Structure formats: C-alpha cells, structure tokens
Length: 572
Image (tube, rainbow, N blue to C red; front, top):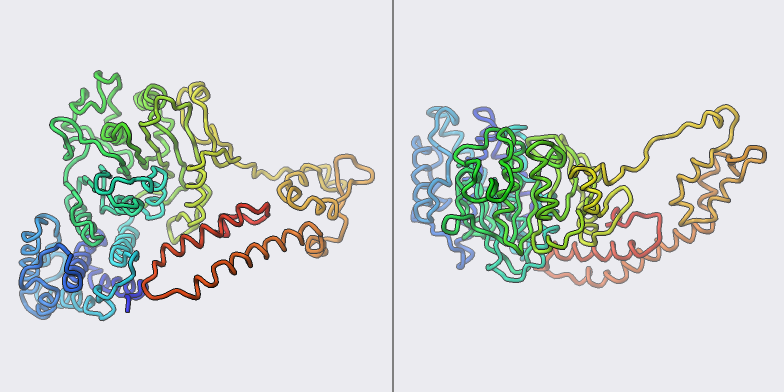
C-alpha cells in the first residue's frame, strides 16, 4: 500500500517538535532532513536494485535505531554520516553536528533528544519502499514540504533556500522546457540554486529529462541541494559551492560554460557583491569590451542577470526572479536595461507577480524572460501584470492553479488581454527611456466608484453605472431591458423596472440568463459523461497527477469555448 502524503507530512513535522527550543528553524532543519535522508536511502536501496547509492555496513537506518539510548549517540551518528559521505563523494553535504552540546543539550538531554528524533522515523507509515505511484514523487514532495515549513518558521532572513513551487512551475513552463527533446543532452542551470527546488521543478517539466547544474554560495544549503537531488533520484546532478559572481564554478577553459535553459531566484538587491570580480570582467559579463558598465556595487540584481545572459547559449532561454526595481531604477542600471532591451533585444517578456509570495521578503517581484534565439527580429516586450491573481495562505500569498494556468496560457499565446497582458512595441519603450515598469504599459482596471451627486439628490440610475456592467449585457442582451428603462423625465438616467427585493427573481426569469444556465449545465453534464467511464475504470498504478491535469485541461477547453459569464480559469 502506498504511503499517504498527509500521514507522511504530519509524522515528519512531529520530529521537529523534538528539536524546537534549543535552536531556530534554520538550524534544526539540518538534523531532521539528514535523518529523513538516511531513512529514505535505506528503504530505497532494499526495494530498488537500480538505486545507485552505496550504504556501508553499519550505516543503514536500523543501525541508527540501535544507537537510541547510547551515551555516545551523537558521536556515533557523526561517524556513520562521515562513512556515507565518503562512500558516495558527498563530503561536506551533511553539515549537522549531532554531537553539538550547544544545540542539542548535554549528557542525558542530548541522548534523549536524538533518540526521540530517530524514533519518530520508525513510524510504519514511513516505509518509503512501499511508494508505488509511478509519477508521484512522494519523498521529494515531503522534502519540499519540510523546507517550506522551515522557511516559514525561519522568517525573513532565513527562507532564502526555498522558491515557492507555484512560482517555480510558472518559470519552467514559460521558458518552454516541455519542448526540450534531447534528453540528458539538454542542460539546465541555476546559478543561485538554494535547496535545488527550482531546478527540480524545471527538470520535471522536461519530457525526456535533462542534465542539471547548480551553484550555491552557502555551504549548508549546498548540502540541502545535494540531498534534495538524491531524494528526487537525480543522483548525478552537478551542484557546486561558491560565490557565483566572484567565483563561478562552471567554466569551459577560461570562460563561462553555457546552458540551454537557466532558472534563477537570486537574493534580492545584494549589497557588496563585488569582491574579486572587476570592473573589466574577465568573463565578459560587463566592461568596456562589451560596452556595458558595471552594475552598482550596492545592488547586485543586474550582476546576476548579466551572469545569466552570459551563461545562456545562443539558442537558449532563461527565467529570473528579480524585484520590480530592476524595471525602472536609473543611472548604471538604466544603461544596462537599455543594452538588454534595445541593443541586444534579449528580454522577451516580463511577468509581474503578486507581493508577499516569497520567503524572506514581502516586496513584489517579477519574472524576466531572456531568449536569445529570436532576439535579432524582436519588435517589443510582452508584459503580463499578474499581481492580482493569488490567495492568502497564512502569512504569505500563494498562486492558485487558475493563476498559474492563466499566466502560462496568455504567455504562450502572446495575446493582449485588457488590464492583464500586452505586447509593448520597442518604439513605445524607447519613448519611455527604457523604463519597463509594467503599470506604464498595462493599465489597471478602473475600480474607482464614481458618485453621481445629481442621482443622489434627485433619484435615478446613471447610464454610466449601467454601462459598466457591459460584460453581463453582452452575454444576456435582454437582461438590461428587463431590469432597466430610460427615466421618463431625466436624460442619461434609468429607472429600475422591479422592486429591489425582486431583482434576483427578475434575473432568474430572464430568457437569456436561463439560456446561459442551460449551456453551463449541458457543458458540465457532457464533460461528466465523457470522463465517467474513465474514472470508474481506474486501476492501481495509474498516474494521478497526469489524470488530474488531463481532466483540468478538458474542463478549461469546454468553458473557454462557451460565451459565458463563468470564468473558465475559475472552473479549472
């Protein structure tokens, strides 16, 4: 029987309770995730002959269980983790010190804490060898569930290792990873990979897999990323530690290695980023050689973006999350923006996101899409203003499924949508001095409620107010005349044809509205009939994620085709 995610998640979170108090979330995540890693590879090695992780004698999870109550439990766990690291070239990955008295307590306190931590993972619901769902990345999802919660608990300064899955999915889709057809020859790179979640979401979007590369400055977070890759069966992912701007690790000879696809969520507005890097950059990311100035030393946003541009193949595509300030800040950044937009024409599009999506900051951000292959003939920049599409989720905001799908559909079709998306010609951008602030080009809907003083004093409904409901009148033309008639003595004003408490009944009785209701009912009934047999014939081993996606797509297709008051994306 497959492990249920809800049971797994609740069990995993219990173990965190054993460590709270002595350290903050940014530290105790290292202990929890290491034991999760050991439990997973132990179960996996016994159920999957192809699993390519070597577990030395004495380093299986059962050997950790045998240490419960041992006065030297911390020291012995450290020894086992060292053996695992040496056997699999994972030196430096396991940064947690299980013998640290400052964090885990002294004597009996430490023994009790570590014994309880191991005991939590003895739960029979955590037998990972029983997970049989073909496309259900159970352990990887559990790992990201923990990291999301750690990011939430860590607060503003410690959540940088995690990119929300919904944003990662948008990025992976808009750069066209679903069209990658070269299998492992396809390369994906994240220059600031954190825990690797963004890289893995990108990887999942490819139909035939890819080879992934990542660099991360923080050594502890590099360990998270490497474990995350193994837990997702990406054993051969190449994750390196180092400062991406000042000490890039991926090079061909003396220049930066280039990749097919790049995804990145670099730290926002990094100060003092310029260290060993020079004004005349040896990797030609900036400098007189390419006629572009160095980014501001007190703000590293464009340093990361220029690194991405230089690391991208001429046929490649990249998506990078940056704060909105990169779209309009002046001085050196304005010159770099002009270089990218007008001279090179690398920027294909910009997607404005809701505020408060990311751990570590509440400011709104955007996704900048870089595409080199069609740059020479590019006539403008496609902009999407998606700031209003989200749901509150605790202290943060989160993109919903309909928000993700709307963004991706509009991006792929490159169609103008009033108050949401627009292709902005290069000439218009030039007139605005290459300021790319989205509200300059995509107008927000008019939400101001205009007050007609004359109507308040003398009665009647202003024609302007009724005209604002044009969406309803377009779909139900006769409803307007059923509800309103021109005022007998006041031009430009209307009277209500029924009592206020009868408005609902009048709408329900309208012929066009009834027709719309029938269309909706028939569309949904047809959809149910079409898929009922398929759902009733499901057998063990089916792919639930694939099925849900197919059902959602068919619903969206039906309700997008209908001329209806129902928002097809809300149905989806």
